Image 1 (cartoon, rainbow, N blue to C red):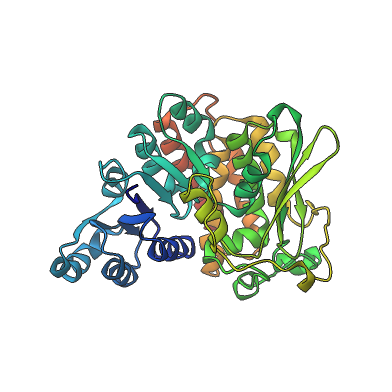
Image 2: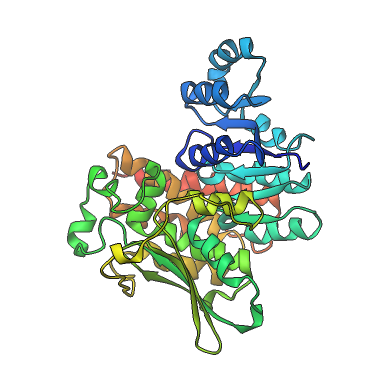
Length: 387
């Protein structure tokens, strides 16, 4: 009898983490949650740990460790805290797969540790490959690790490529909902409030990624990630606005055929497909009934209204640490916007300013990414402090 795959769920309290734990809970014969981690949501982490009984629970904020330890000690669940603990916990022998569902730059270090330890990666943290895609791919060449994409768009591409010759791929078409501002004029987008930006029409996500969807920065990140995941040249990766979010991405082939993966706007399917190592889990999500959708429509994205989208090809052309810079600046800009420090239109200008003021390293090592991440954050903060 096969033993369940042992999963470390990093970012367990977020939307992806909770949906992954739902799958794990419903299929104990297939999966076991061995490690759970969270950033600052200690009470949510305690609740999930009591339900799923991992060996270890890790909280990134070290000040919250006493609360975590006191609550979980009666259950025999070990506890740890801090970024180093988060990075090192994935190396344990009782972990087969690491689901990285943390937000932003924080996903890079544990993913690097997991690859070096030979663990498989269910990658929901797109910033890992945005920040250091070339470095991660070099590590993978010397490791037994495999990456299984969790983002719905990249999972869709992976499904469309099954059985296909990569040399016959003409384009990857990454679909985008268009977010809450799809039909808004530029002047209105510039002055959008956080409450308006957080009203995504189709998906329920955390605040940071919801704002990235509103600016279409998430789609820029997904184009960068797709390049590193599938080895397709940047000029052959495009975003297509698809407001219904039923087609999750498409692949166009050199004979003119286009394959698409369809499904309801629900992350259970891509999570289960990744945890199952590209195998299908019956009943992972509710069934899509196309007759319930009168129209499936597509639009060309407007880079003038959503200039963050254009940054994808800018940094892919530049290479080096440029993508690391825009990711760091975006994290600072989004936080400032959510705290009413800057208007929505300044998110792009904050990133653009940091991109041109931060040092550039053409062939970075890991320590270079760490340094550039810190520098870009500082440059972005300098720009924001002018307001």
